[in-house]
Image (cartoon, rainbow, N blue to C red):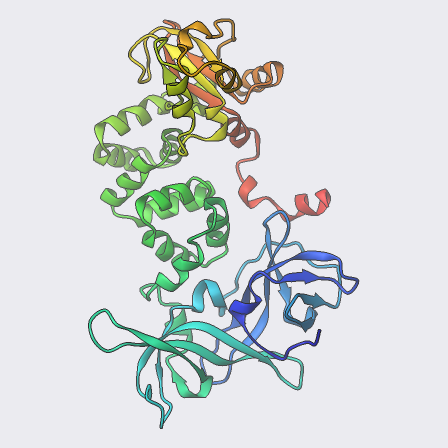
Length: 427
């Protein structure tokens, strides 16, 4: 298959990146270009390549031997594992350039003089083997309310406004960039946002709806979380915190200055803020500090069919869905007297019309809200569980710790931005 010397960056996204012997290195996720203050064509500096562990690294374009329809081949299988960080004057094509507003000046064409936005960037290899931006795919603004213009491919020389200032504007339309994240998992979106310049990250984060932003925030590191929250209005920040899992909201608020924390808790819905305030009373590295206050809780008179229906709720994580907890009313935490638990596998083996009160396991050991991290870890290891109940001294259920909560606290605080040296050692 022959190599190409011209390609649009969107076509590169997802292509495998291989070494000279065909060994897999990762996949292309974006291209990095150098922005210029003059009208010369921006140079392509390299590719943003995603490794198997989802870390994105920078691969200089001079390492690229060929670009083909099936793969991008490098001249070496040895690449730096340093996480991608943009320098001043650099931009990600798909992550930043798309959506840039420009003006098309191409005499003789119907779209001459039209305003447009960039939807893709064409790059070509020069005789010196450098790669430069040479064409843009632009969507011309349609005339009339609600009309969308067509997409045209124009030479860079016929475009004005494709400048450093225009590309790095934080108020430009981010709708094009948001479409990239529509089908991505929240953790992958968070990874992509971490690699953007701060102003761009904040602009895109603010454009998400509350539910989506809440999901993404839960996957960001502490510094990025607090920066995003500080960038939002108090009312919007409160809405996003209400949409987060209460334990994650409590963790985030616990990192804020006391005054800012209290301001946000005051704006939040009293029911949501009350739950978060209870969680904030516990040390972060105890069962009470790690637990979620919204596990699956039922009464003894609940049928097996009803309990299974609760476990099917897509908003319940797989770990929490593995266990149904049985209490006396009320079922909202803190509950009435705790009775026991029923494993999901047990529910699947019983007739749907049976009551969970007849199959409850009353011997399952319980966690105390003050149990430290080490005790919680041994609890999960000893009983081969992925979720465990947290019960207070009066036998009221306060919540449940899941294995994903535990792992979040066992891993280093900066595990989402782990040092590249640890990754190199693991390889």
